[in-house]
Length: 388
Image (tube, rainbow, N blue to C red; front, side, top):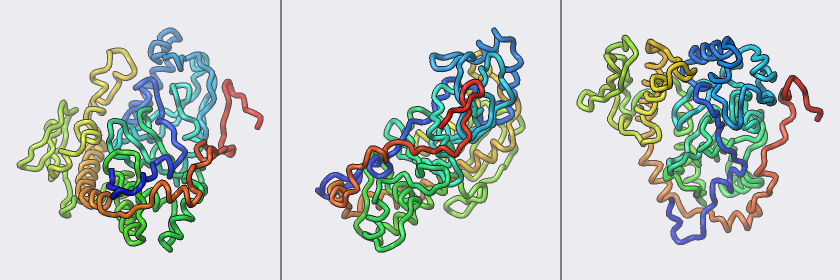
């Protein structure tokens, strides 16, 4: 937690970004996979199975069975007929965030999801970003993809898909613009939070100094770009080097290792280097080992289940994504000391009392609820449409 210097309490994340919701709960692991072609095959196996076998493959839960009648996902086209009777065409595949810094694909069909969080889908758009608060005290991260983990608390940056209504406490932008005598946007508030949120607690220090604010926003934008993989494969290591495939991965690797002396990732017979030690020793919530374990999870699934379907060869794109993640972890490690310094020494801060005096707090109840977004296609169960 940032030192308040004896001042009153600092505002919380919920004070600044008041609307939040838990991440998507799938209820069945097989609807999410790093490999889109695996999801396509899992869907084909499901719909081709006889009705009795289809139910077992589906893995029913209290929230979802093949006989569940549910609405379509907002903004997604797909069948809303009961899966047991009319599966329809394959649902769209959408990119999702499964861990703080890990992405995968998901079958976007509410019939397959225990808790799809339709309010998140209604606000999804090209301008949307999600601040993800993780369990176990891990620092928040920023995602451009819908999060799939009900343990995460998700704060969307915008309340609507067009990005014109920020999910910020009413009056906050006006207050900060006056305090810093400079333009302040929802994106710059997100960048500031990303810069100072290094301890995993719920407080967000806001500086009284315009210079400190500008410094933090610039730093936070670099963090947000890294969290959202905005720079893709063109990113270099902090010392300017680039990680290359020194020896290709010829088969499905059984384990991921690291040689610290050679700064080399060992991926079966494959060799990726250089990979600096700080990338291998990244915090537990975003390690290369967890990334690799997720892509091998199908090996431990029960035989005959959809989750047991996986690739028998290692795809080239997985190596590319591994290099990208290792480089991202190294760059985030480079920025961490500056982020800690900013959070510790960037005061004096605006306090909870200051925001009360400015009539920003308490946040009205309407700002803590999702917006009414009625311009997205939403088909009800069994092909019906609601009258609005």
